[in-house]
Amino acid sequence: MPPDHSPSAPHGPEAANDDTVEFTSPPGLAPGLAMPPPPAPGEELLDGLPGWGATATRVGMFRLVPVVPERDLALLTGWMNDPEVAEFWELDGPAERTEAHLRAQLDGDGRSVPVLGTLDGRPMSYWEVYRADLDPIARHYPSRPHDTGVHLLLGPAADRGRGTGAALLRAVAELVLAHRPRCGRVVAEPDVRNVRSVAAFHRAGFRTLQEAELPGKRAARSVAVARSASSAAV
Image (cartoon, rainbow, N blue to C red):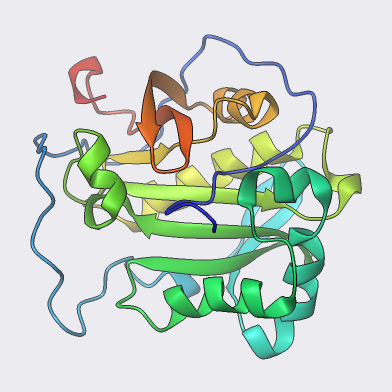
């Protein structure tokens, strides 16, 4: 069974560094250890993610596109069955397994949105953008209201190992902070065994705060913060 959170999984020899890039957005809100109450029926939880539009990156024009299982299931199943991906996402096997993972989000309350990442119009990555403060992960770290999490899978092997993961992670963090004014932090929890993923997050401007035991893995809890946030807001 896959864990509560499929770990973000960009691949490639992307060396980490100690620099933390701060992003432009309002500062985070006050810390809170308890999960907030469930969202109200019909509440928009991710501020219209499907309409965020395209953004330019050093590797091309990037856009997040909502997953449509009828269109995308075969593509995603193929990616999930790549051994490099399966090691961390644990969704290899028949298409029904991938579909169940997607449907759990698509039929939910909108706290997690599965999307394809397209580069110059070409589908080449799978993302989950989610409200970390409304997710079970909030029980395992000092969450803050509107914390937004990301998971990443780079699909085609040709897109791995060229710094693409870091470029796109930075782009998505900027999109989140630009379009979610109440969010002061983008959070991530890659598996510590996935050293390439952890390095990609570092290169994208995320700072690893600590390691944490999560269901199914030991994670490097990482954040990217708004430029106007103080160090205390991390």
